[in-house]
Length: 259
Image (cartoon, rainbow, N blue to C red; front, side, top):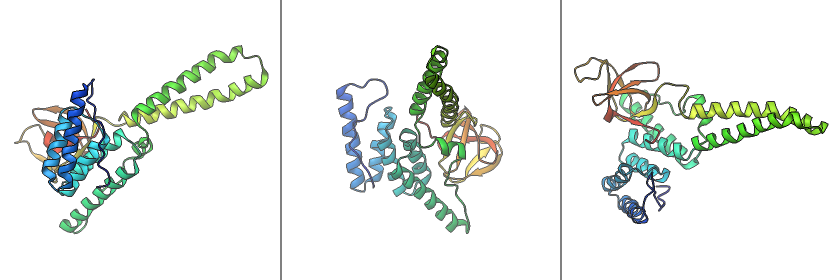
């Protein structure tokens, strides 16, 4: 395993020092179980942290790698994607995700004779991938302040060269605002409906309605991307690549963006 960091994990919403110490002990116990090849025990410790509300890229990386070693590649892909959501552009995580997808494709090819697995996200998502949502939001805010500050100050600039520089800077800042706003919108999924998710189970049925008796429209592929559009009675209304829409059981999908 490339990395098992003893990071101080902090709950969303002010954790006490005692609680933080307890979380670190659970994380350490999970790492120790992993190194002893007690992968299910390691997963139980990591899952306990997730259930407690911890959102940490190292935790998600460890979860993904443990699942990958167990051959549970759908879960591995999900948690690598979550780690990249929190720490975009991380080279080690990107390589591990690509490896998991290649292994999934190899497994499928061995079973079916031929298979392709999409390893790259859509273009708009790929462009926003190296940046965090928080970083893009701060960048957009700063650029807006600079742009409107310059627009307000420009009429009061009397020095010719400074006024010319301000005139040139305005459209550049405006384009930068538009670009950062577009990247932030893509990062948050504004250009596609629903929440991005990963199919966890091979052959998970996509049904016409949120009911076990509803007809199956098609079988989803493990590791496949999906968009969650709604929920009802333990089912999620989803759209798969290619436009197929229907209902899948909640257990068969994992949302990429941490709750």
